[in-house]
Structure formats: structure tokens, C-alpha cells
Length: 116
Image 1 (spheres, rainbow, N blue to C red):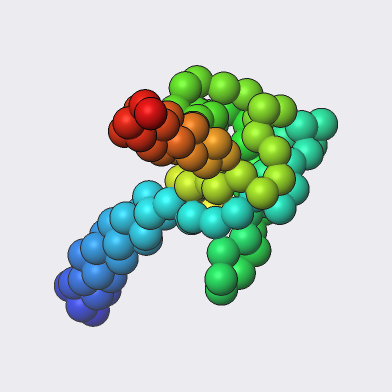
Image 2 (cartoon, rainbow, N blue to C red):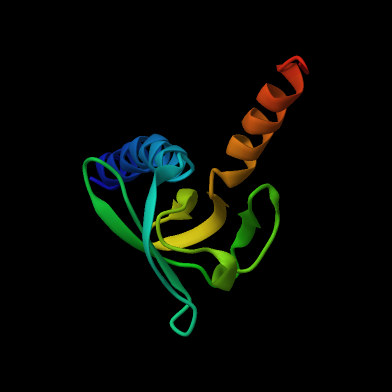
């Protein structure tokens, strides 16, 4: 009886380890979307994509705004964001406004126009 119990317990442990590993891998995938709310006082950011809207706790997360280190208060609504999280706690937030890309594009177009 003890042998059966020990074998069952060992099997349960072996089956639990891969499922924990898969769950962790899923948490590392960023949640991408548009920022709909930022609450610096509550230290939260809300991001919405085509399927759903999620609110993340940003305390202790690495934050980048337009490619450089930043603060949660620098992120505004309508920015694009990629939030890497474990559950509802963000570990990394990368927000972009899209203005830099547009400025680079316009600058390149201006340089390519010949002078008359």
C-alpha cells in the first residue's frame, strides 16, 4: 500500500512540473495593444487589444517609453504598449507613441525631394 501511494505521489509530481513550466512560458509573452488608462497613483496601466482589455500593476516593472528608460507617468493614453507580465503584475512595459517613426519618415522624404 505504501509503495502504491509513493508511486502515485511521484507520478503526480512528474506531471505537475511540465504544466508549471508551460504556464510560466505563457506569462512571458507580451500583451500588446493600445493604452486606455494610466493611474500613476495606483501604479496601474490598462491596455486593450482586439480581443480584451487588461489592467496590470506596474510596481517594480522595467519601463521604456519610446525606446528609452522611463516612468509610468510618461505613458499616455492612445500610445501602443507591450506589457510582459506574470498574472496581473507587469514585469516590463514598452510604450511607443509612434511620433518618432513618423518624424523619421517625414525627414527622409524631405531629404529625397530635389531642390528646384
